[in-house]
Each structure stands twice: as structure tokens, then as C-alpha cells.
Length: 94
Image 1: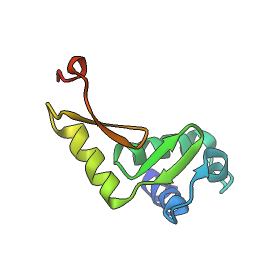
Image 2: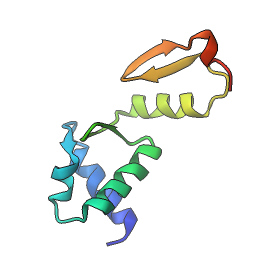
Image 3: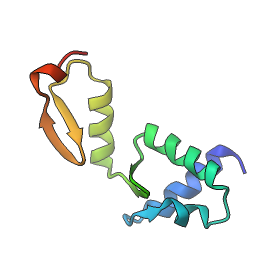
């Protein structure tokens, strides 16, 4: 199976809004190392969020916000554990 097809399958496995564990995703018949790589690609594309062993799909709004925060230099905002906050003075560089 191509990486793109695996990404698509795993995204749809979590797209119902329920979190799945990495083991749940691997239990679909995929090598755990490939599942790990796929989830990493989905995270970098702002489609899913991983917290520990749990993976969930991001909402459209979360995805857009994370993309903006990641790519906007000098933004005074940061998203930590689902909480949007203003950066402290020492964090504002970059």
C-alpha cells in the first residue's frame, strides 16, 4: 500500500471525532512503524493531533489555526494542549 493510501485510511479511521490509540490503528493490519510514520505525516499536515498514544482528527477550525500559528512569524499567540494563550516576553522572538 502506498503511503498516501495509508494516510487516507488512517485519517478516516479517526475522522468520526473519536480518538483512537496507535495500537487500534495498527490493528487494522498495518506495521506499527508505518502507522507511526503515517500519523507523523498527518500531524505535519495539521489533520490530526496526537496526545500520548491517542490520535484524533482536528476540526477544520483547529487545523486552520494551527497552520496560521506555525507559519506566522512574530505571532504573539501559541496553542498549548488545546489552549490559546499569549506568549511570554521571552518566547516572542522568532
